[in-house]
Length: 547
Image 1: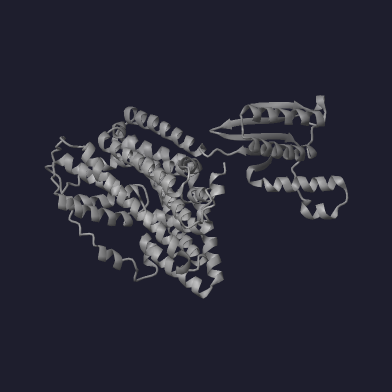
Image 2: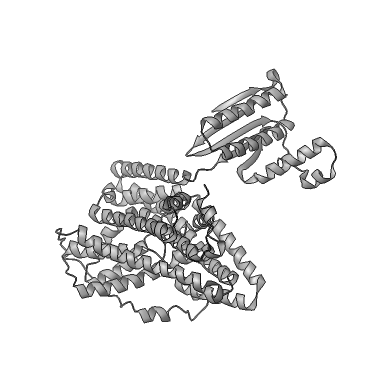
């Protein structure tokens, strides 16, 4: 709601007082937290005073104030006519020390206040109007709301195009508009993933003092990661024998062909950990080889005390994290393009097809989250709802992007808010994204056994044991990007003797389970970090319990 304040009729100071009173009333009506309301009013007061000091009401005798709340984010807009000026203030701290005049000291204090809130204030001059936009409160759920709105619009748009446009128009829109936008977004995340993982691991190993600094906490962390993946596999097998999705359908697979894939060898995986070429892992995006290389680089930096390389790796990590955050601004648009393209290509029925398999997967994710919360409660003695509440920004990003790599920045911020030391979460978050994907064993187990039920393939108990070993190995090597699980799924289908035609069904299910699956992965990895920190006494419990 925008309101005008008439300076010509009221006078400068009364109009200013009325405007501040109006802002106070609007913020009170929105029921903000006390600290948020005080902070917002302070920013508004100092900004409005600066604008009034440089105002020119010769052309118009009023200024306007607008206070609005959208998706939980509270924004205040101040528009005052006047000349353009240096909004951040030019007096600074030095003038506060040297000047004796009270007015100049007040100007210095105001400048310091505005500088401290610079991240929440934006100044613009246009058409002889000085405008200041103040983000009084940033909602942690704004991105989630925008993504859900984009998903709704995508469903409506996709259904309308599919039903009222020609097949040629639908194909053109999907292939030349929607798919390229999504591809650019995913390529951007892949571009940032390699340097983020490499630089984070290098910095962490170097800062922790090599092996001596990480052997205990790191061992606990990897122990929790491994336990989570084994538990996920066991849960997937149990759910399949309880719900048995796909049983009795008996799809005709006359044209089905199986893939001839080589066996997955544990020894081969160990040999492949060390690349024969330093450049090749970065070109191919092999995360395990990159992490091994980063480990040895960080260890060497620690042993040689190469301070410059340590600083360079930290700065590069910060740069690529910021690039990732920039790409994340496109999340609602990418969600719209992905969902609309899927509906245009395969029809809205894909959203409800294979319901049994989909619900089994989602139910498994919910059970894993419950297990994670129970572990946090009884293993670390922490309230799990506090963990979930502080994880909200990360969960929103994970849900909207379906990429645990995209959620790395928010994961680190959430870990910090829980009292986990930076030396631990700067290592555990990127490593967990690459190594620990707790829902992946569940995904593979349910998919392969569902394919067996659908196509009437009998899998012997001994074959299930072999499949379980292969699933755990593939879990570690599967890239953390949307759709990557379909590649490894084809290997498992071949090993189980199931036709590759099932991949078509898996594609329609993939997007629906990626939402909850990525959220579960990120939350489980953060919980493992929390447990490892609590076990070694590194957790700031006071900060964890802080509102």
